[in-house]
Amino acid sequence: MLPSLFLAHGSPMIALENNPYTQFLRAYGQQHHPRAILIFTAHWISDTLTISAVDEQYKTIYDFYGFPPELYEIQYPAKGSLQIAKMVQQRFMKENIQVLLDHQRGLDHGSWTLLHHLYPEANIPVIQISVNPSLSPKEQFRIGQALQGLHEEGFLIIGSGVTVHNLSMLKWGETTPEPWAVQFDDWLIEQINKKDLEALDRYEQLAPSAQLAVPTTEHFIPLFIAMGSANIKAKPTILHRSYDMGTLSYLSFQF
Image (tube, rainbow, N blue to C red; front, side, top):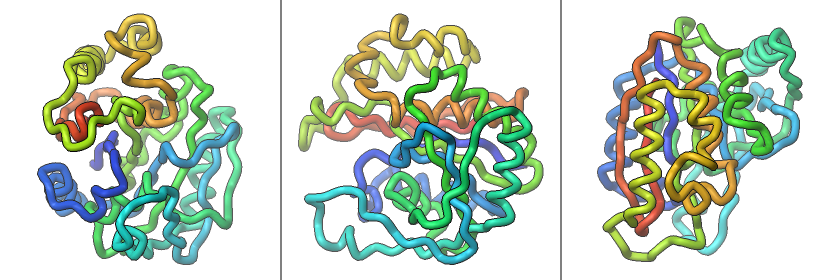
């Protein structure tokens, strides 16, 4: 049975970098061989949950600027699956979750920078799914719950985001993390290990430095979707933890 994952996509530069985090991604991909990948990306925001529904090859979206030219040369030519997209749509509809299908959008960097390392051959169907930052952590968890059981059918579910993501607080070239960023992640890990959804739903009031760590929620909420999609008996596991530029967290979980 495959797990659910929350993976940090951090800077787009991870697509080019060879560091402990990207080495972890490559090694992890070699351990699991899914039938298809369902990925919720922080870089696709919509009021209504939307699913990429194509059979053909995706275009690679470069939704960033100011990076080295070689980053814009990377292609991730994965294909989608209309059949699987419709199956996922039915799952959400069964739980009275509004959902749309999208037949045009490509893969944004919240998806392909990770998949480029996990599955470099791009030979596994990818179903990309949007997120709605206006929903509470409990509501995000419920979205994930609609997908419970798909792991047993060979599907890998990924929430792609970042736990501590405040671009205004980045410290370029700084390798030592800021204490407040570490404290926020420490609190988060404690609640996840306890599976305390009530506390997680109130993270803005309870977590230290929550406003600094999560000034906007789009990168944070894929965590709760991934949690909700997991087997109820699954034990949360930290897969990787590191920091870049002082505050950018690469904390990643398996559920």
